[in-house]
Length: 200
Length: 200
DNA sequence: GTCTATACCCTGATAGAC
DNA sequence: GTCTATCAGGGTATAGAC
Image 1 (cartoon, rainbow over the protein chains, first blue to last red):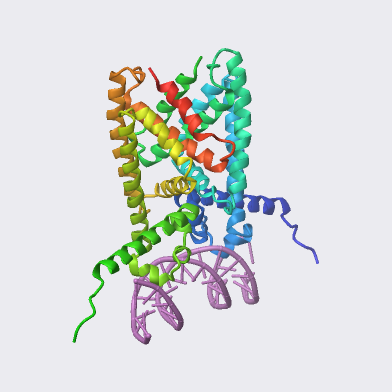
Image 2 (cartoon, helix red, strand yellow):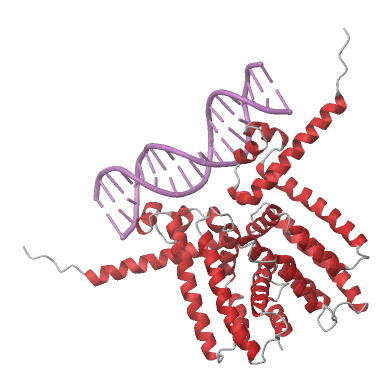
């Protein structure tokens, strides 16, 4: 009996497309309701699936969350890398561009903001993820700022480590006020003012 | 028949003491788990009560949350008022003292941080509360900073409104990093560095 | 790979005794 | 004012058919 040729590649592609669609839907839903507030049914519905259909691709809600976060991190790193290249490695300028970009994706900003706050509890599934992420980013920025200080672009009367922490704090804090009152708060303009204060 | 004198005052006091004890327990539990993550059973247990015993004092979880927030706001306003008086109305100095104080009450800082992030969703019970709170505080600070600019204490090349927003953003942002890594982040020292940048 | 059906737990809230 | 008992609803996850 002749077997019809199994469309192996096509099927794998379809699986990958399903996962991507689910991750997109999950990203939006987590952004609106946070991890604890988002229900699997919401995510399934947004992906045109039922709950068991969704759970066929990801064994649990926690697994799904972690995939969403990793995927976002991957995309954002890629964006930042490209912007830095276009900018001749000027971190301050590149970071302003990042804030401007964030202003076009409020859902994602809200996602990270809410998950970040939730994740401070040691028993949150993304607890380690966010601590490691901050440590990694901080190290990255300390290096870049040190170089900018040596180039005379950034004021050298404050340590690079301190400047890195202050910069992240400002980014995070501005996001909160912007999310609460988007028309009132011009996030990128305010961030720019902060960057001016850091210039040499 | 002679009725034994009803201990009216004593009973009222006992009721008030119960409410205060519940609010203390609820504050701690909300701080650790947020509004959505905190269960009424957790709060009841922390207050040495059962769930119905708890619900006898507060008709619903939402009511309890709002009472917790209002109570905290009342206490904090009172503290800030007193500190300002001791400081000759120097807002920058008083705000540094506030950050130092916050460093001694991580649970409360976490409570406001987590509820703030949750409350960005329009359907959160504390949504309006936090928006109004920011508007009120911002107005208050714009007035104070304007005066400090006229006195020559604060740089005048940036508008008071912008400085107020940046200051709140820095406070909020530092709290997040401090909560995540309390030993690594010296919140009040970092805040002090920011305040130095705002000096005339 | 996706569905229907359902098990099973958790949670907020109520009824009513004491 | 606090308890025991209980309900109704919603939530994640599983079983098993197609």
